[in-house]
Length: 357
Image 1 (tube, rainbow, N blue to C red):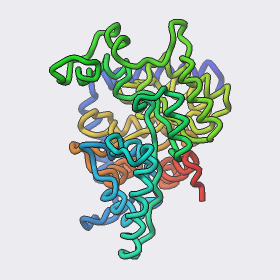
Image 2 (spheres, helix red, strand yellow):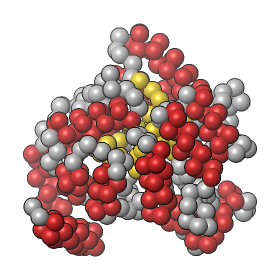
Image 3 (cartoon, rainbow, N blue to C red):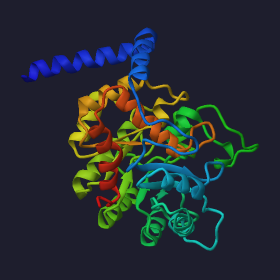
C-alpha cells in the first residue's frame, strides 16, 4: 500500500472513531457486544476459583489504603495460575520500619510462600512500584535513589497529584492546604499548575529532577510509566526514553480521558518502542470504552508494544484477578487470537519486569 493510501485509511479510521465516540454508537456496540458474548466460550467458572488467567502478569495492580488486600489478592493470583503482580501501590506510607513499598511487598512474598507451601500451589511472583509524588519529605531524586536501591521494579511519574489529574477530575483540597478537605471540582489549569505537580519547566522541557529519575531508571533497567501526563509531558518523556535508550517505558490506559491518545499518536509511540498498557479500567462501566474499539486498535497497532493489565483494586471494580480474566476474555471475544492475548498479557509484561523466564 502506498503512502497516500495509508494516509487515506488513517483519516477514515480517525473519522469513524471520532463519530463512534461522539454518538457512543449504541446500536453498533449492542450488535458487536452481543455477538461477542454469544460467541466467546471460556472455562466454566467455579467460584472462588478464577480460570483464564494462567500465565498473566499484571503490571498495574493496586493495594493501597482502601483498596484490595495485597496478601489476599496474591493468594488468589497464585491459586489461579497468575504468573505475577506488580503492585503500583501498596500500604506503606504509615510504616516507619520499612524504606518503602519494596519492603512491604517482600513481607507479602514471605507470607505468600508459607501459604502456597500449605496449599501446594506455586506462588505468583510479586514486584513493587513507586510513584514520584511519594517523596516523604525528601527530594524526588533522593527518594528515587532510595526506592530503587531498596528494590522497586517500576517507577510512575505523577498520578493523582499531577496538574493534569487535578484539572480533569479535581482532588482532595487538603492536599494543597485548604480546609475542609473535600474532593473538589476540576481545577482551572492555572490553579492545577500552582497546587499540583507538573513535570515540565517554563521552556516546555522536563524539569531536572525528573530527568534525573529517568537517568536512574535507565541505569537500573526498570520499568517507567508516564502515568497521568499531558500530551506535552508525554512527548518530552518520550525524548528521554529515546536519548537514554530506555526499553521499558509504558503509557497506561491510553483511552482514558487522562491520556486520550489518537490512533496516530499511539502508533507513533509504539514505533518509538514505548508500550501501551490497555486496562480493565478503560472497558469497565466507570469509563465505558467500547471493547470492540480497543480490540481494533490493538490489531491495528500490532502486539509488539502492547500490554493488558487490570488497573484494579478499588471496591467498585472486580478484584485484580477477575479484572484480568475479564479483559483477556473481552479481547479474545472481540477478535484477538489466543496467541495475541498471551503476548499482550504475559510475554510483554514479563519483558517489562525482566521475568521472561
